[in-house]
Length: 119
Image (spheres, rainbow, N blue to C red):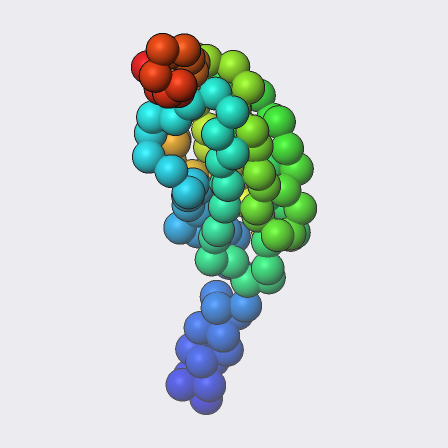
């Protein structure tokens, strides 16, 4: 009987997990140019499944990524931006990814050579 009880407890632990291993990935390095389109993907391990991913830019929620955990953003302004995401499910406790820091540089047009560079 005690063996059955420990199996039930183990099964309960597996069924109810708050989000863990929350990760934010992008399709780029940490230096980009204005006008670049960045894909953000937030993932987590959770059971029950994550029902909401939120994307933060400089500590402000900028997007409810829903259950997909993906979002695309065109970088419009130069500067340094810190992104992170949170994952939520029905188990109390919100888990947060590590920060992803992007430095966005403006584009410079050199008309003599018809060349665009990002500095």
